[in-house]
Length: 181
Ligand code: IMP
Ligand code: MG
Image (tube, rainbow, N blue to C red; front, side):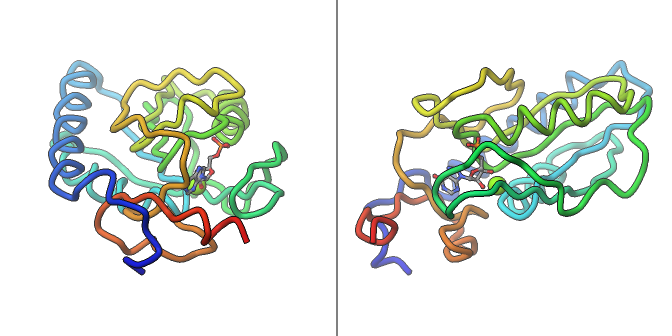
C-alpha cells in the first residue's frame, strides 16, 4: 500500500492532536445545552475520525451512522445522492453534529443538510476531518475542521480509493498513476 502513495500529508500524531482540540471545543460549545448531542458519522469514510472524536468528547453523547452513495465513479461525485442507511432514531429536538471524512464539492453534505433540516433537530453542525476548498461547488458552513488539503487524491484514516487504503493510520496522497488508469 505504501508504494501507492506519493507522500504522507498528515501524520497520525497530528491528527490525534487536532481531534483532541475539536473534542474540547465541542465540550465547550455544548456545555450549556441540556439537549441530547447526537454524533452522525457518514459511512464509511468517517468511521475512524468519528471514533477518535467521540473518545475526546467528555459530555454525554449518542452516535449513529448514515450511509450515502453518490452516482458516479470512485473519484468524482455526480451530484445525485442516495440514502443507503438512514438514522436509527428520531433527531427531533437533538443537537446534531454530522461527521464527514472530507468535503470536496460539498454536494453530498448539501443534500444531507437539506434532508436532515426537515426533521426538526434543535441544531445541526458539521465536523469534517478534511476539506478541499479548491473543489467546492456549493458553500458549506463547517463548524469543526481538521485540516485543509490540496486538490489531490487523499487516502487513509478512513478515506479510500476503490475501498482500499482506509486502514492506513495517517493521511497520504495517492499517486496519480493509481487512479488515472
Ligand atoms: P463531495 O460531495 O464532492 O463533497 O464528496 C464527498 C465525498 O467524496 C467524501 O465523503 C469522500 O467519500 C469522497 N471524496 C472526495 N474527495 C476524496 C479524496 O480525495 N479521497 C477520498 N475520498 C474522497
Ligand atoms: Mg465519504
